[in-house]
Image 1 (tube, chains in turn blue, green):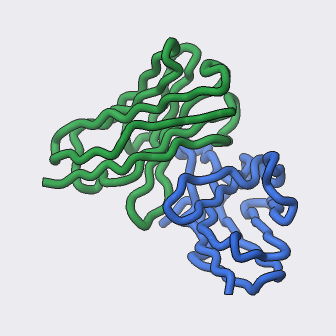
Image 2: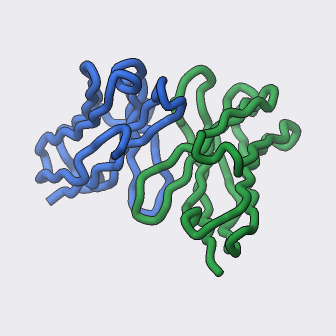
Image 3: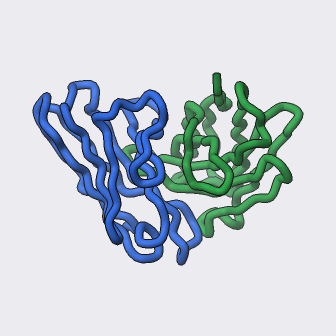
Length: 110
Length: 119
């Protein structure tokens, strides 16, 4: 099974708030910081959130991240059509000695 | 501005090798590491390893330890990833990504060429 687990899909209507979870274990999320990436269809990933809850310049403040224990979450408020994309969490695992990505969550804006 | 441009798509036969380049500009090459990540069609990402741009030290994922070689040319601000003994399961988009040293934050990515392995 995956080292880090995400729900395969999520959805919301414009203006709504949606959250995407990322579940791991003590050796990864429990010990290290989590980063989130957005991938629009046919494009390279874009850094969305780093170090659990920091936004790179240019990322709207509608995007926020949090971490508690062995889980992390990405929240998107004021959902917009352009947010329709795949979202991935990523974290270093101390036991497996590698970076692991979640399986990705496909967000649909209905 | 930071730019990362990778080499183009490749088609290889099983057993062959492929070498992908990752040319950077807009920043001091040796201030950051370069990581390599691949994405098979319709799948998530698989981390392959990284190279320290300063001294060329490498660290590879256990999944690729015996088949991958990462190098860099500081004079050309370019990193390279060579994968050998290709099999059909290696068909994927291969990305390089700039990494803030001491972290696992990938802040800029190349466009990622598709490498197809087929007989």
